[in-house]
Image: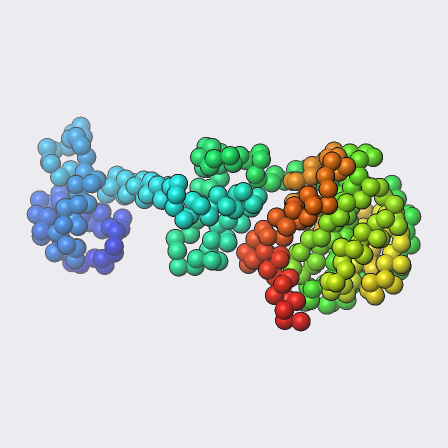
Length: 330
């Protein structure tokens, strides 16, 4: 009888090996029956045989149990995987680079798989475990990983201040299906009361982010910053929150030759791309942040980090890469 041979012994092979050993066959004879090299059979027995005679078992130097052998094999394989992640290796440096750029372990593993499809993949859970154990220097879960907190209810102070000409449910298919760049979603990210805020704009197709500082919710200032952020970029449409800071939307339509849509009251998920991106922005600028303490250069640095971050929805490309490729093809 011959069993199909694999690089490593299978559970069925180990079960049959145990049976043949109990019948008193020699290792060379067993190797012939299994279709294995005698050295492979010898190594399998040597690695996995019991180190002592179990109670009630005959005195057999080759005492071997297939379940025990298979469990030992699985344990060794896991230890080999863990040992593969060592300081100084290319994998280690790649992970460190990603963590210093505030990439998630999933993004790091996905980007590695995209760049090196023929290499051994990185294990997301292993990266998380190494972070928890403090194995990466100057890296911590609190300082480098974004945590999803409880979602806040949308603010309601000024939803009646705007009478929109268009709402998001009126989007044409070209916007809904993300078939082009230049369809932007916008909102503001608040700091502490009276301590400034950010306006954020996200391209629906590429997820490219543009951010600008605001001193207050002044509509004229907000319009001016949006015009500056989108200058020279494709602008086919802008979909905004209902805050009073966006009340000069008609002037914005004229200056950018575009169409402005608004989310319906209390439905922030209609601008889901912008809401999800703002969650990432909040990692760098948490609730209560004082925006008066930072400059435009600081904002641009964070913007660059976010736009360089690989995204699962983009097949592990970054927003900057997708946006640039779309511009090149236009």
